[in-house]
Length: 321
Image (cartoon, rainbow, N blue to C red; front, side, top):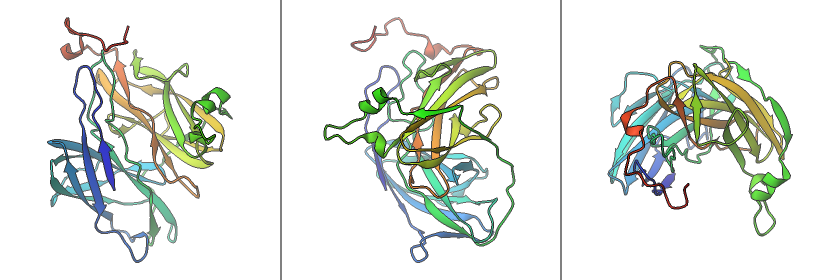
């Protein structure tokens, strides 16, 4: 597996760039699936970063569409805490040995479930308020799922609850035509899209919140008929949406689903990155993670940092108003 992230021009903070190669070195080639027998599943990776002095990557595990806690060992050193996302720093032309450990709890003996490892490019990057563009940062590599056979069933340690769609409708014709190729085929026939919007439904790059909350909307459309679970991440952590753990839907081909929800921002910092991650689950055709572009969430209840005040010599990019 490889990812190549090119640098995009930006005003303000420089955007990282680089290329990375990953290989799982303990893949169960004979069986074709991992086995859970009461001991944590181990995924061992050799990761080679190149063309960049320092490259950071986030590692996050999803089981049947839901993010779960995991542990990580980097170059033989086990980190103490379970986390939803682990951030690893890779150095130029250096191979890093990464071992992830997780348990697929809440399934019965004999079941085969799917897990994904989300590889997230520079997940700690956050732009200035006056130029809230992320470039390729927070991008999740298009990596397929892997199966696990449950040999020892277990109960879930926590009860998860889902929020279901607010509305479902056909993809508007003007949207569908935007993705049409010259040969008559259409990107949306096989590829899903996730959009993070403000409460009115407008796609955003920046969202303001105040008095402890903000209203958001997620739109999901395109691709083949697929079951999805969607998690909202704020600064690499899954958060509740209107009191629910995740969003769930069966997306039929040719339709759009919308979710309206509120999030509590009272404990958040001034600047935060939010992103919606849609993961297929169940008996479904689609087998890749889809995610929205990252959005800069600004908590207006907190003071602005000096670095985010527009400098006196600031010049907008050509074409900006």
